Image (cartoon, rainbow, N blue to C red; front, side, top):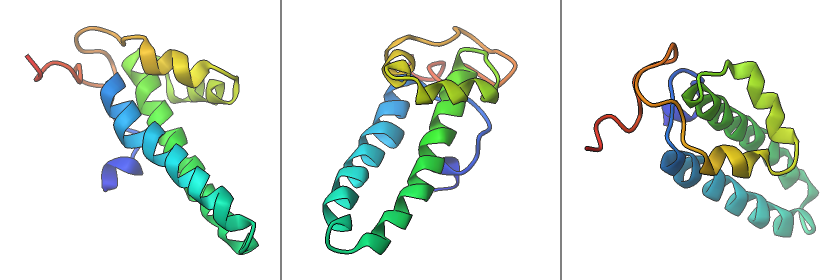
Length: 103
């Protein structure tokens, strides 16, 4: 679980979708339904935003961009763009290619 809280390294598109986007969006939807009955539940959204931000930082690292570039996730459709466009092939300054061991 420590991978969710560390901004170091790179992640591929599949990891971004399966470990960051889909679970976080699912939990947000459930929280939205629950917050109508129990408003305090809305506080859980802040850690989820942090986890999504960490995933975006790692995804931008895959493009060889620094973590500050992840501020772009607040622009509509940027999450989709970084979720579908492949990153830098081979190693970059943020680590090894996350797809290197798949072959």
